[in-house]
Length: 356
Image (cartoon, rainbow, N blue to C red):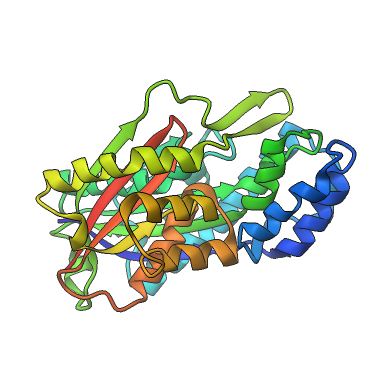
C-alpha cells in the first residue's frame, strides 16, 4: 500500500500570542458588541497559546482590498511553499525529477495559474509533472489530499507524489465584519504550510527506508446533505467572509461515530483496534466532541491538542502538523491509525493507516 514517507512544515514569520490577539479583538469589536467582555473569554477558553501569521498584528488594524490580500497570498504561498518542498525533498534524498505529481490543497486564496505552476518556475521540477490543484475543501482538504495521493499511487505504484497544503487564513480577515463568526474566527484561525511525500509500493525512495511508516489502505469521503451553511466562505466584493456555525460540535457528536463505524467495520476493524488518532483539531470543542463521539481519551487526542495550542487552526494544513508528530513518535509495526478532518459541505474525510 502507498506509504507516507515524510511531512515537512513551514512556519510563518510572525508569532502572535493569544493574549495579544484578545486585546486586538477587544479594541476592534468593542463598539459592535456591548457584551464584549463576556465574549472575549473565547480566546482563553479555546486553549490556544499562540499562532503564526504572514503579517504582524498592526497589519490587521486597517482594511485591505481583496486584490491586495490575494496578491499577498500568492506571494507568500509561492515563497513558503517552495521552502517546504525543498526541505521535504532534501531531507529525504529525493530529486525533483523523481516527483510525478503535485496535489496543491488550499481554500484561502485564488491563483490561476495555480500555486504549484508558479513554484515550478522557482524550483527545478520536470516540465511533465502532473499538477492537481484542489480548492474549496477547507479544513477537510488535508485528509482529502492524502486520499487522492493514495489513489494516485495505487494507480501508478512507482510514483512519488507531493501534497502541498497552503492556508493563509489571516489574509481572509475582514476588518469591517463585526459578526460573531468573524470574532470566533479571529480567536481560532492561523497561517501554515506543509509538504507531504507519499510513495507507491514500487517507488525506489520507499525501499530505502527501514523505520516503520504509515501505509494508507482505505479512505472514505462523506457529505451531509442540506448542510451548506455549517462552514465555509461567503465570497463578496472585498473578499472571503467566514461562515462558522455554533452547531459544529453537536454535529460531530451526533454524526461522526456512525460515519466512522461504517467505514472501519467495512475494513474489518473495530474501534478498539485504533491505536492512533490523526485528527484535524478544528478547535477545543471539536476535539472534545471527537472524544465523546468516538470514546477516545485525552491520550488519543494529545498530538492534536498540542498542535492546536501552539499553532491554532490552519485549516487544511493542520492535520499535516499532527501527522508529523506521529511520524516523529514511537508508532509500532502493525499499529492502526485513523485520520479524520471535517470541512464545508458539511463533510468528513477519513483515512485508515497501518504502520509497516
